Structure formats: structure tokens, C-alpha cells
Length: 380
Image (cartoon, rainbow, N blue to C red; front, side, top):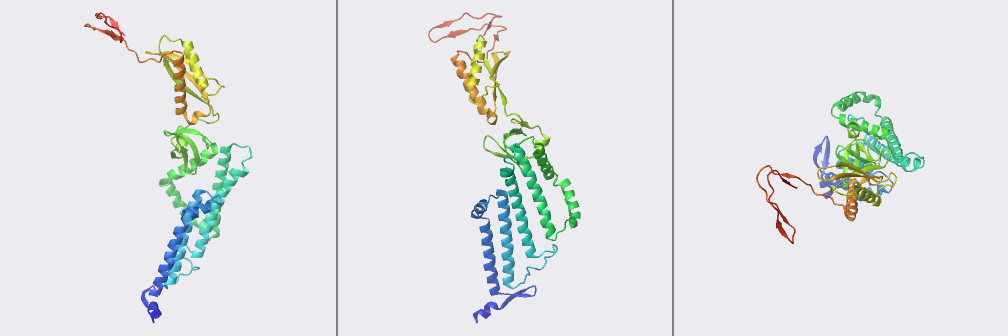
């Protein structure tokens, strides 16, 4: 009697009656689908997939797609259990693909993404590792081949799924118009990324400055480049900035970089001793190169000091130029102090055009009043 009540129709949907028992089955199966969808996006599943050496981005995309697919599967199953028949093999409206074919298409696309990621890792870490090519060139080749594999794989999967590319001609024209307007920045950045990989004005590990951002190149991706600053902040820079803006590459070609440190000493200092002290300070730093050796130049006679410039070459400290210059300044102060050379304060001459100025000299032990300075005289 109770079972009969549960199976009694409550309402009709599309010619199919829905019972209380069907609603219970729908709620149970749909809740199970939600639970499985959340599990597929959990950190435990991502750590499990990471054991197979899959790229992090691919793992994120895969878990999201699997989660959505599980949700759709259990939703359709729940609807069937409620009493509304949905055929798995029946083609869906507009796309002419059944649910089974749609799930198969999603699975094959995930395989293509995974295979593209594995191709890049295999080429970069194994196949090209002992080729003798520059490491950055190996990365560029691996990235380009992986992109080709991804594009070709997507076309093959779509064609085998019954989505013929010839039928996408009108859609391709519409996409072309969209690229010309709304997507022109994305297309421009993508093409700029290919140019960067081909010409290699920057490579992985280079110290660069572009658009006011300075740091080390970490990744060169399809649309953007990741630069890690000395503050350990990852800056995402669009690839077009490296094409249409001036770029300073500290390590392009030759990693050696020349650093210039200005130094001012007091008038009356022995300029030869100053030069020897500056060169000794440059030689003491462990990151300074001995070839070319440090050198010191007398730049000019300034208003308050004799201006020198210490020139030091280094191939390691280009990644921390501020730290390197600070270390050199500490060493310069040390050697100048040991040599008894004064770093002067700014000096000014005071000219009195009229009136009388009384100057008093106080030395801590004896205070004496100097005679007043007369008209036209000056004190310094």
C-alpha cells in the first residue's frame, strides 16, 4: 500500500508522469553527481594526476572537464530515474551529437591536451637535452612542436567526431571578424609569442627590463611572459611589449655586464691614492671579474669634490644590480677611510655685498672672536 502511494503520479512533464519515488531517486542520484564532481576537483585528485608528470595547467583543465562531465552524466541519469526518458544515443538538438559521442569527444580532447604536454616535456627534458643546442632554443623548439601537435590533434578529433571542418567556413569568417575587433590583442600577443620563440630576443633565465618591469624570465607562454622580480613577485607581461617596446636584456649574448659607481673625494686628496683605493675595493668583491679588471677614472673637477668613477665587470650580479652596487659602495667607503681620504660635504662660498658680518670660531677648548668681515670680503 505504501509502495503504491510512492509510485502514484504527482504531476506530468512532457507527457511523462513524475512520482514521489522518482523524485527521491532524482535527488539521490543528482546529489551523488554533485559529490563526485567536487571530489574530481579536490587537491587529492590533482596530486594523484601530478604523479604522471602532467602539466599543472593540463591537470586544472582536465579536472574541471571531468567534473562537468560527471555532473552532466549523473544529471541525465537522475532525470531518467525520475521518469523522463533521455536516450544516450539520440542526437542532441542543433549539434547532431549524442551524449555518448559528446562524452567521447571530451575524452579525446583531454587526451590531445595531455599528449601535447607530454610531447613538450619529452622533447625538452630528453630528446633535445643532449643535442648540443642552446637550452633556450631547445625550449622554443619544444613549445612550437607542442602547439602544432595540439592544433593538429584538435582538428583530427573534431573531424572524426563528425564535425567537418568544411562546415566551419562561415564560422571561421565570423571568428575572423571577431579577431579583427574584439580579439585583436589576443591574436597579436599569440603571434608575438611565436616571434619571440623564433627570434629569441629573450630566453628563459635572462635578466630583462621592459615597460618599467625588471626581473628574470621564468616562462614564455603563448600569450604572455612571466618575469620574476627581485622582490619574488611574478609579473605577467603581454608578449607584444617585447616586440613594440624597447627591451633591455642584461644577459643577451655575453653575460658580462659593466657597472659604473660614481665617487666624489675632497679637494687636496692624492688622486693616485684614490685610484688605488677604488681599484682595490673593486677587486675585493667576489663577483667582480678579473678580466676585464676593475678600473677607476677621474671624471671631472666638480663644485665640491673631485669626481671619480669606479668601473667593475661582473657576469653574476646582473640579477641583483642594486645589491652589487651597495656592496661596492661599502667597500669603497672602507678603503677610502683606511687611506685617509675624505668624502666631502657640499661646500659653498658666501659673498657679502653690503653690511658687516661677525664670524665666531668655536673649537671646544678656546673661543675667540674673529674680527668682523668688512664690505666686499668673503667667508667660506
